[in-house]
Image 1 (tube, rainbow, N blue to C red):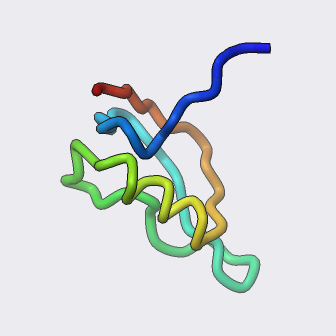
Image 2 (cartoon, rainbow, N blue to C red):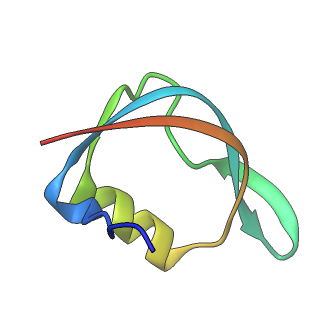
Length: 64
């Protein structure tokens, strides 16, 4: 098995993406803001933990 990535210890560059928050079994707002290019790992993990998302594709690159 591979190594586990510590999402919170990294900064994430957001590239191409199409992803939506799911509310009442309906697609709602996007996971990322349209002009958002970078996100801290602590914020990213909080988004994932607090909501349900339908991710069609997401290009994310991690940096220390």
